[in-house]
Image (cartoon, rainbow over all chains, first blue to last red; front, side):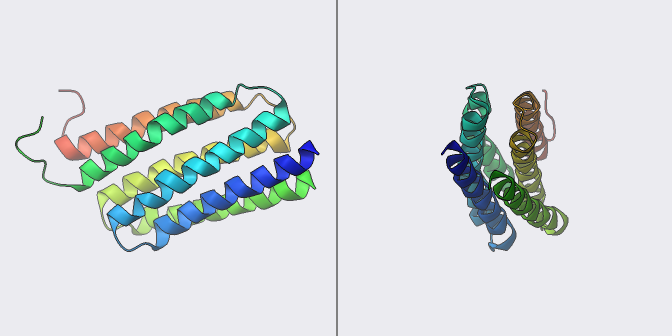
Length: 92
Length: 89
């Protein structure tokens, strides 16, 4: 039973990673391309981590998921700020 | 069944890495390349987690955690350097 759950979670997670990469490769604009990796790959990593938790029967890989869930929006914000050049004068 | 699913997942993540490398090669701006490098880090973490399942252990998640932390720090450092010209004032 747990084998079926692990297989479905693995396929779901890697499918979302592939969808995110397709969005990164195919969308026409940078601010559209930001959507693919920052949302789809977050769910993909989440599904893979849950599969690893079910497989290894330990809760330790959830730390990876927590860290990525915290840092993915920060990374997207930094990349979007980096694309908006030059920086405005009134912010520091 | 788990073996087939694991290999199918590894192939899909490999396809994702190939598309991301194409964007890293192609990307018109520096921000595209930074985003592609961050996505490559996330795909490498996914490969480490898949190796965890494929090799039937649970010791490699620490490598995944280290890659997540180093990838985050590297991406933020690159973005801040492109934006401001310096990293540490």
